Length: 280
Image (tube, rainbow, N blue to C red; front, side, top):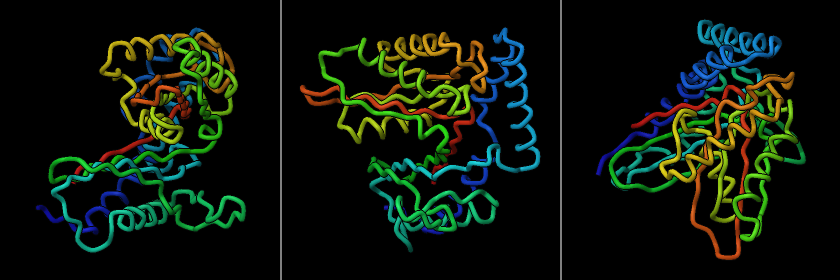
């Protein structure tokens, strides 16, 4: 059994909150640069160049890449041989979010109640998913999610008879309806299977993957490539002003499901698609 102080978790989360919001991930920056080479639309090329310049300024000055610093989402893999001393895991994470968003001067966007809209003042509580795994480490993945893109996400309980064509049609229609609202070029996370809530969780988790990675199952890896091509053929383009680069990546995660169901969730993310990871 290995003991970890809750303060270590808090400090790691605090740092991730600031770093992920101020420093763009290498895979995203690479895709934006590649997009300027592929894009033929001059307005679209200009938009992509502006996004790259914006990320450079944020990186150098350690200021947020986007004014919407998101709702804090965490995917935690907790080793069964770990004992946390002090606060609980959730308390430690939420204290890290509070400190990170306050000391990093990040926008606090969370309201205490969805209908009675009072701001909590420190961007807590976070949304936390925790999975027990073997080992004596804690793996914490942080994914701040802005709501310009979150609001354009969708979930549908398809019939098994809808099959692959139904899944593809729903994903493409969701992106088409989103249009310019999620600040394209987008990253598309797709969750297929499980229950309604599991599919949504999978789609959010898919956004934490490197956009150059592919699903380990060749069938779904091919589907990721097909969807990316179809989405870019929509012509929405950077900032919705037209062009070839509507999406930078499509990541799919799957889970077994019931014989009577085919849940599909599409979690749309903006061009930033921030995330950071700490292993304790």
